[in-house]
Length: 327
Image (cartoon, rainbow, N blue to C red; front, top):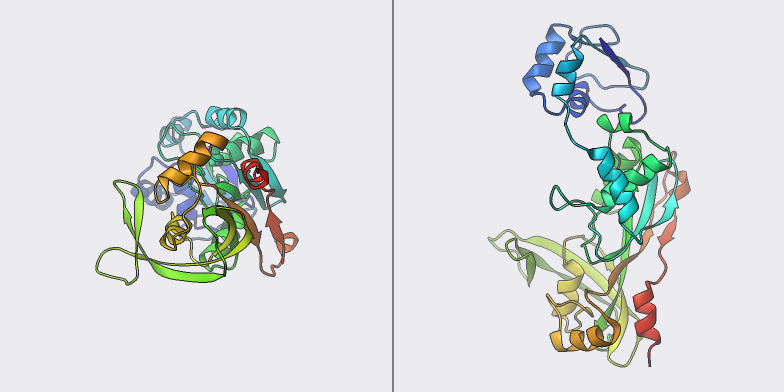
């Protein structure tokens, strides 16, 4: 027999959802069969599977160790987390509390895996939490910390990570309800003179990982987007611009700014190749100069009171500093 005591990161979810995380290779029918036969019990009693787990609940598994192990994922996850933490460079922790941590992601690092062999910020974060003894490998079988928002591989800046189930639920709720204000900074071509708010619809070309902007929703699969942007500092042939994402879709800022005649510096997908090449030769700019610069939080209650009304910011990236100070 094996017993599990429900802790904070497992509480608040249905029993059947927890069982699927604990033994992800088992079919759903297996769990209900074992519950009916009392081979799996909750606090020593027969359960249905729909019960909400609370801290202190005890699950008993009257199953062989071999059966349990056969239904668990067989991988080298712990080595993967350790490898990501030791090999992915340039990641900084900007803010951390008991529930969440915010990371400054460099260009070239994925937020989450695109293929099974990838190492991403998500694995780096778990590797960090393991290295700091904030969690252990055993707890990963029922709850895995994860990033809550994504940035393109070559976009730098703030990514939210949830350390706990409560943190994950709260951050994802705030993002879904658009209660976290998200600001980005970028260098764009030409002189931006005034604030603008742009709206439109994106249609994505999955094959080429590219989007196009249309002004009206149509029969094709399109997504509404809204971006507010304004100049921060005008230079000779470029402007430092800050944008607030009212909605958040892949490539939204890049296509919106390009549509105004102010494409991002280094953006070869939507930008000006000749202009980009000039900066590539002089400053080795190899990707769009865009970073998630600031997050602003609404008033929050415990256990998120430390974040209530906070502005979380990252330093200006070194490549921005070099280009803006150059003569």
